Amino acid sequence: MAERKGTILLQSLDSVYHWNLDTHISAPNGKSWNSPSFWTTSDEWCLQFRDSRLYDGSENVGPVKLSILYLGDSEEEGPTLTIKFRVCTRGEHTDDEQVVNHYDDMDEIGHTQTFSEKRVYSIDLLNFPTKNYKLEIWCRIVTPSSFSRKDQNSHSSRHNFSLKNDYEQLLNSGKFSDVTFIVGNQELHLHKNILSSRSTVFAAMFDHDLEENNFEVVDIEDQTYEVMTEFFRYVYSARVNELTKYAIELLKTSNKYAVEELKSLCEQNLMQNIKIDNALELLTLADCYDAKNLQARCVHFIVSNAKKIIELPTFDINQVTADLRNELFKSVVRKA
Image (tube, rainbow, N blue to C red):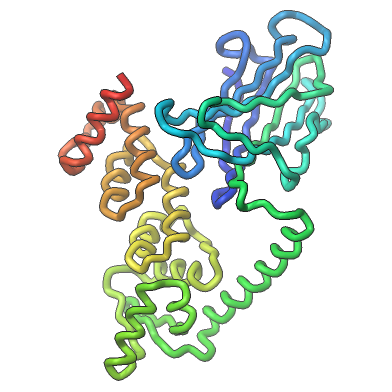
């Protein structure tokens, strides 16, 4: 069976997908290999690699193409995104790496493509070996607005890193704090101005407290100390140390306090961890906390894997609401 593992390396406004491919094993359809599908926000994609020399016996330089396929609903308008590729080869009996195309620097400007009518974007790969080889492919998908010049990015990254460290240190020290959050039997010493600047909910809360004699203690009864520590770490520094572990609880908390960037990050993480045995649970979660991207991904996953989900011993369609059942039914009908 061909080695075609895919890994999401980065989730933010930019998404990087990493695909390993061993071409000495025949392509499933005799002509091309397709990667596992992957997601960026609410859009589904896959990569396709095609080397005609491997199936027609030609030693001549022929069409070697790498493509990204947009798998979204054909009736919906596709996104406009910038695509970058990096491709490395390793020979059958050597680990020597060779970069084989001009997008070897993932920070360089790629190609901006609109996927409204044409659902695929391809590049020709030059100077490719003619013998069996293994591939490592990176595909980076970036929104056009996130581009800037490389030197500006480098300076900005260093500045942001220092700034995040400074704010996380302030969080950890509690120095100059003016509000205490009590979670269980533990305390977090925080700063109203930072919390208010990051959350409209906190801003409204502290404005009200100012009118009501400026309370300085907030009791948190619906969440654990560990989750709130990660939540406030993000509020202060835009970092989360244990996102996968606490993604569900952080989604709930970020929704409660209107920290939309963290909520989106949690959605991205959960979208990459939908499984047969948790898809209905995550669909209900997404519906309860208005996580539209996660909800769309769950619906697509459930419809695509309906037979396996129905066969689960724990399957109970009544664990989702009537509205969600209607949405699932409509999606099945559209797919039929």
